[in-house]
Length: 451
Image (tube, one colour):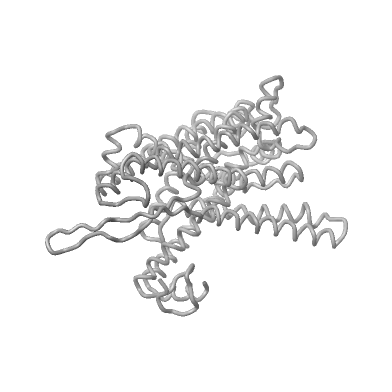
């Protein structure tokens, strides 16, 4: 891999793209430390010390600590992610948008422009809600109209600027710009979490032997989860497809064999994001309403329901009843895995395209039987992938609840990090392959082409 990286740096175009990406990441991390004008830092510190919910930790991991710092990048690219998901769903529901998507580059540019406008709109709503909700509890030094406007404009501009950086990385960098921005934010929180684990389980151990054992167990768990996520992300079911020969004039077409790759994790992290958002949204709203440090937390049946929805209360040995909320979370994850795959993957369209081009699955008749065959396999794969997502996500919940190992990253973060790293490596490999260099994943140790 190091030899392949050395070869990549020898290529001027790749070297410039890597350097540009590196500079943009530095800009992101600097912006994550710039405070928003008029914000009271003491409020933020006290507010997060009182939070038992994982909702804000989940959001803070996605923003790279910018949320707890209430920096100019506090919203990060979460409005863009939400806007992209909304546009993707609307593309399926609205025929005109579906036509635009199929209209080549021009259509995609128009949809991208709509996504940008929607991003700014969502950022305005989120930043205004944050300024008003937290401002009532003491977030702002002066809670008035001008302070709210300044904070709203600042956070909206910061989110829009991060979106612009992501698009520039896609255009002039190594690609996957938005994903790389999200990944660098998540990675920036890992050192803090590892230090927290070290201080809690290793440094505070009664003996050196127990400290060493704790360190080994932590590293082993991280390694096992990492390997499991890699397998989950790279696993796929390949359906063999045979194309019949056809003769046009003096030329013969077709006759080759290929396959349809169906990823085990067909929907990525979308089911986890949707399920987590639905479970944590009421808790976040309750946090806004309460106003912050010193506010009344309330009680009664409303608080009990929030405790069931709060992932920070799951696997709590003192109050195990709240772990029942995990059942709802698992159900939502599996449901959204099927739902999102259903609107993004159309077996009928694939079967029709195969039929038009003379392709068929061995032993399966073209047309409706092929659609049913693909759908049955897809249902089976979706369930396996959803179960894998649940396992990856539940592991951090278990250790946070039983051992109080409070860390901001979880299964969602690991899936995003590994997925983006693998995709980025493949993109660099594709650029190197053109120049007859070996790649990262298929490196044989030399400089020749191994593809």
